[in-house]
Each structure stands twice: as C-alpha cells, then as structure tokens.
Image 1 (cartoon, rainbow, N blue to C red):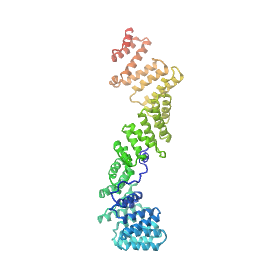
Image 2 (cartoon, rainbow, N blue to C red; image 1 turned 120 degrees about the vertical axis):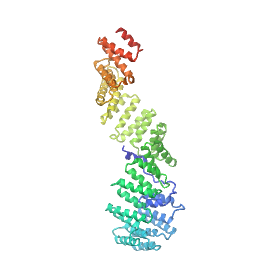
Image 3 (cartoon, rainbow, N blue to C red; image 1 turned 180 degrees about the vertical axis):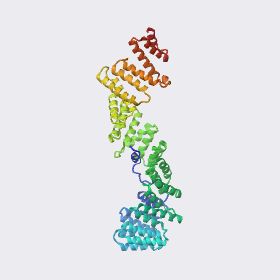
Image 4 (cartoon, rainbow, N blue to C red; image 1 turned 90 degrees about the horizontal axis):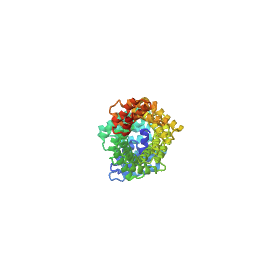
Length: 542
C-alpha cells in the first residue's frame, strides 16, 4: 500500500478534539478567516469563557459559522449575545444584516449595517465586512452595494485597508487565480506597513500557489511562522503543506513544534505519531500514541500505531495486545498492512497457524496488490511443516509474476522439503524434485553466488534419482566447487559442503573403478577433517 493511502488509515479522520486552550480565542478567529471552519468552531467554543476572551468577537465568529451552515436561528442567537457583550462592536450587527439579506429583507439589513457603522463611521475594515455580507448572500444581485462599500473603504483608508484586498482576492479566485494572489499580497503588504501581520492573507496566498508552486507556498508559510511564531494557524498550515508536498521529515519536525501549541488538535498528534513511525522513530511515535490513548483509550488509530511501533521495536507481546484492541473495533475498516503486521507478530510469537489466518485476510482484501503475502503464508506453512501448502502458496506467488532469483531459490527449497516427505521411488516424489530442479536452474541463470544453489540442486537430484552418485550429481558438485573456489575463504565457510562433495565424488570414482581419482577426493576430505575414521578405512582399502 502506498504511504499516503496507508497513512490515512493510520491517522484516521483527524479528530477535531482540541486540548487545553490557553492559546486564546484569536487562534479560532484566524482559523475561521483562513476557512478552517471545524478547527475555528472547536477553539472558539473552548475559549468562550476564558477571562482573556473578547466575547463580542467570539460570538460574531460563532454566529458566522452557524450562518455558513445555514443555521440562521443559531446564528442570530450568537450575534445577539455578541451585541449584549459589547454593543460598540459593530460586526454582530453586520451578521444580523446578512441574515436579513438572506431572508429577503433588504431594508432591515440596511438598518443593521447602519447600526454597525454608528460606533465608527470611518472603520474601513467594518465596511469590508458589510461588503462581504452582501457578497456572501448574492454577489450578482448586490454588485452595486458591494462596489459602494469597497469604494468607501478604499477612500477612508487611502487604498490601504487589508480586509478589502482579502475580500477582492476571495471574489477573484474563482475566475483569476493570478489576480486573487495579487490582492492577497497587497493585503499582506498594507497590514505590515501598519505594523500588523495578516495570517489569513498569507494562508490564502499560499493555498493558491500550493498546487502550481508548492515550494513557493511553503516559503510564504515559513515567512509567516517567523513573523507569528506562536500562531496555531501558521504552524498547522506549514506542517500540512510539508505533508502535502511529501516532505515527511520536515512535516514531522513541524508537527513536533505545532503540537506544543495549546490550540492544536488530537488529529495533529495522530498525524505526528504516524510521521514519526514512517521516519523510523518508533519509540517517539509510540510515546505520542500512548499520550493520545491516555485521554482517548478507544482510539483505534493510535491502537494501530502502538501495534506498528511495538512490532518494529520487537516487543511482540505488547504488539499483540495492541492488535487485539485494534481488531476489537467491529465497525472499523482494516487495511492489509494491519493484517500483515498482525501476521508478522504471530509468526514471531511462534503461532504460525494464526499467522496464516491473518495473512489470508490481508491477501483477500486486494489479491492483485498483496501478492507478496502469498510468500508469507508459504513461510508459515513451512514452519508448520505442511510442505504441500508451503509449495502451493509459494508457487502461487511465483506464478503471480515479479518473482526474484531468491524467490526461485525459496520455491526450489519448498519442493525439496515436499519431495523428502514423500515415499522414496514414488512418482510424486520425483515430480516434486524435478520441479525444484526447474526453479533452482532458473535461479542459477542470474545468481552471483552460485555455490549454495548448486548444493541445493545436488540434494534435489538425490531426492529425484534415489541414488548417491550419478554423473549429473557429480557435475553439479563440480560446478558447486568451482563456484566456491572463486573465494579462498569459502573453504572454511562452507567446509561441510566441501566435505560432502568430496565424499560423493570419491564414492562415485570408486564405483567406477577409478581408484586414483577416488583416493584424490577422499584425501581432500582428510585434509579438511583429518580424524574422519570412515574415510581413513576407505583409504586403506584403496
């Protein structure tokens, strides 16, 4: 499974559970303005009763969220609460005006907009909010009103009101991305000229460029993080852009910074745990997963991470415990990787039959993509000494395509074991050995170190022919010795293979009546094993 596909199963739905919100309501405002509405709602609700919260502002944005979702009654309730909290904060009247427009009552809307402006008739930002209200309801029907408020805002701000340029960018992005980017850039410039930083303009600017020039988008967000190092929006957007750009190492580093922000979310910790895992930082990933589970013990995504990390750390008992918790989620959607990991765990715990069951579930999820699992199943049947099944599944794997030389070698071994389990002289034994020879020959075609393969072929020949010495067997041993002799160190490393070959060859030449050749090979045995009494006796007779 590709990284991104599997990763979505690792982190799940990016749960919108925020932690202790000492970062303040402003993060919620920033998230709303950057159109990250779910995060905005969570933070605004969590921080509503904080002593530092300006309730008039929070109620306006909570009302705007409800209005965006079509809940006009709940929206009006929030706007009215905002007015009660601070009648001089005109934006809640703008919210009520938008509801009136939506309900087709333009005159009531205009009264609310007028009331909004009473506290400060030269507030260009408030004028931009009124223009946006008209735009949100119907940009075509209220085009004149939108233009009027934009013009007034530009006039009173001497063309430098950032919120007007953000609005213009939002209006333009559907038809002209370049023009929209230009407006967002102007918003950034004019706010910074007055000593402010406009995170929504940065984020919207970066989002426009993310698909066409992701490095540029990331650069703008790096710049935003330098200017607003404590902004949850700035931190999270940069982390996500690194992730979107497959820069997973940088994404992990950035998420590590972001989750220290009080206004991060549980889903961010889940993603961070996944990134650490794929970066092979297993203990750190496990620590984060356990941190999430401490407050959310039934979190299936983090139970998956515990399983994966403990398996990677060779804590197979702990991994099995996590796997049981994961698979207890009856309505969850499991991946092939879940089952293959569980199969690996069970294999390490010496429970091959259960491992076969787990691997089989993994394979059945997508046989075409999960062909490698057939080899895993074969390995487990090999551990179970079920040679017929071990051959069956390894053969299926090889037949599925993409087999390597090592796969041919393994399959030949499976056939060798099957042949040895069958009665001597039976057609089935001969067939198994012949199949093994076929695949060992395929492996020999491209193998660099041919010695071990020739040794296996020699064994298969004896299984097939039921004889210790045949011309083909001797030729195979000669080829094995020639391969091993390419490296002088092999004589010690593969001493048993050398002795076996010399013994077989000595016996062969003795049967052929060529005692001189026989003595030569038996002497080679004694050179390696001077105390070999049976060979000494044979030498005396020769």
